[in-house]
Length: 300
Image (tube, helix red, strand yellow):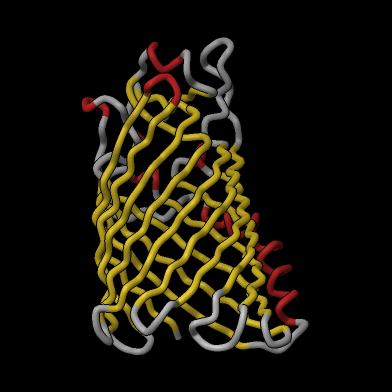
């Protein structure tokens, strides 16, 4: 696999470091436990550019990794605060322009209704980060806010749900088509996720997840006049080759994921999963994609 470090990685760090340090400063005002976690994933996406037409479909494999540093602060019996940040990156085998590095500062407040592992809980969180791509026109500042709830019902079954808003703000290139914006890679979206985890035995668990997302979606394909009327923005997308254009549309995505996780130790977990996404975009511009994935997580 050919890995290329994004040329503007240092820009991502400079842009996000003030937010990261501010959130860590919040955590420094109280005593708490530090948590360091790492994760890695190997994936294969059979429609990376979300193309509608088979002739424009591009598939590729990628490797991703994340390091997270959080300080957990207990506030009374029922509340806790987490503050810190995530450093992550992803490298593609062929589409090297999609290689990216990101730095994100996070802050969340969690409430539990009761004591012990079976008490229901809710968490609100915000984050601010910067994602820099090898092909810089995709680089964006990323804002997120979320509300998550969950409950463990017994030793085997737990449920969770997450509702979030995300805004990606990218630099807008000059418009190439009269009357249509070139600001393709700035996006807004609302996402609802839900899932369950069921322990088959002491080491093995089954995970089922679902996804609904509504907002801006990006489809990259060869130039086609049938997309212009429905698009909010259009811009050239040379990451996918000469003649490729990215179209920003209003769309709704439905997804499902099935995974199996195996605990190697008290701190380490490996897993495999399969995700399927179906998107229905404005003007009948629909597309789908599938992604098998291998994962590894370690918490110190």
